[in-house]
Length: 433
Image (cartoon, rainbow, N blue to C red):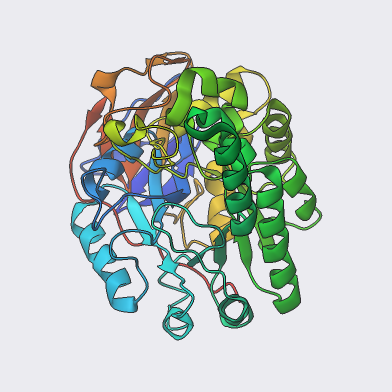
């Protein structure tokens, strides 16, 4: 790491040098960053911002505000809104909303159902981040379980295929077993037994088998078990990989020991599992078997989460504190700062072939974050920007703080204050196939 000056002009980084004489430029605004670390803005490849149709939980405006406060400058949002984004018209409606309300840069996955393959194949590889297949049901019930539908997408899609992998029949069998045995005594501690390691592995291995058969560009989301890691490797440079994997903050942070205190607040699909699973995932992030780190930000109202276990939805809000959580891993001694930038920015940009983002480079868009790793951030209800107004981290004191966030060269977050301007842009992509 070194000390540099960075000059921004017209949304992009125009110059990086050891010392830049700003006197030769007119109208320059100086941000003093002595003692701070400059990161490329984080790119979150998996969020659920709930718009349209579920805006009592969240919307693109509120959650993009929370994202930039947390150092996330770009996001990719999932199709299980209402209506599901299963046509080109519905997909473009989401882009229209974001173009006028999002503080962060954005892209939206095209959704796959059992019967919309022809519509999916119309999706532009340069304009859309990928297609999303739920190979296990979750919020929104977009389960794709017909072999012919899966094979058509895997064999013909020119886009990255992102998958939620949990075997539906295994989950149903486990659920029936535990309901029969425990009835209304079921609580969240049973979640990793019902949505088990075996359910994850059966589905993930099937996705990998399809990808290898058809040479598809597969990206397996939110790996939650140690067993699944054997499906991936670090033998090729990321840009040459056809099969990649993602880990999420909650699977890197929480374990099944936390259900006793957090309950439904850490109910996610796939489930948070054992300490050994968490530690294996951490190791896989460090050694590049897992390629990127994301949030799977999926807010629900607190009232919804406080229902009995079987009725409470899965998911939780994370974008405001994900980068702080990664920095905590640095303080804990196992995640170098440079590797944090790699996993939340560099490798996401390379994985998705995003144009001109994810790096601090001349000519790239100025999506930047200034971080003070020596000033703490207390997570309390008053500081939460999520529409749902709760966090699984509430009451925790992070050792670092986000000082400034810039999106396309504009300051959108400054020392705790949001600068509300619609500065987000649509992400653009190189072809992946």
